[in-house]
Length: 267
Ligand SMILES: Nc1ncnc2c1ncn2[C@@H]1O[C@H](COP(=O)(O)OP(=O)(O)OP(=O)(O)O)[C@@H](O)[C@H]1O
Ligand SMILES: [Mg+2]
Image (cartoon, rainbow, N blue to C red; front, top):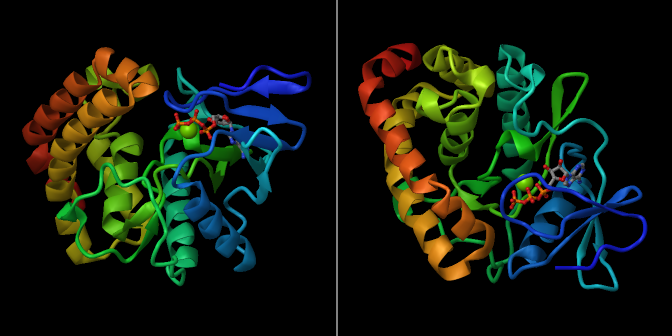
């Protein structure tokens, strides 16, 4: 972990990456095997004129990646109301759709290395490079409007549907009320799932795939989180020890219990 240096402001968002700091108008983050692939992706998006991602500025003297700071507010827990209202749900879905439409033309190099510990053929043949981690802590808002996605550490080739389902897990949310942020305890997840799919413009066939993929994804996340905790330790092990696996199991049970209601909203 880099030592705190004058002018560096530690940033903590998600649970995993240690040593993320702000320096002026930049963010410095630890690199990994996937960093080069992520930079190729972000550079493509910048060339194509898509402004909903940070700019890549290179690597600093301490070997950290340097990204441009994106002005705005990133919701952290406990989540503020602006980050969970229905316009936020629509806004995030619209932002994900614009990201997908921009990235669809990107052909990553054949030897690109992504963080694929979660990958399996459950998502079908890849259509594009998904973000794969659209949590509230990874979205920048401006005046209550979602304007950018950050933290592409889990980006990898996948399907549009997989990225939609992964995002909806957080934004509907697909979770047992006991495991939701206070502001999401009472929300109508079926209605919000529908709003998300509408604002994304998800097609009819894909809609039928949402719940089955969500179910398959829970199985896979459970196994992947356990693998990450065992192999990588650190924040992953802390999340696992803090009950991440049990939360996934409760979400699975909640999904099964509310399947018909959610399905009725979707189709
Ligand atoms: N380019 C950026 N512009 C604005 N804010 C940023 C930027 N990068 C990071 N941040 C802020 O720092 C926080 C942590 O950054 P980031 O999401 O990249 O790492 P992390 O969440 O610690 O990683 P992980 O999600 O793997 O645990 C974000 O939630 C956000 O508040
Ligand atoms: Mg993050």
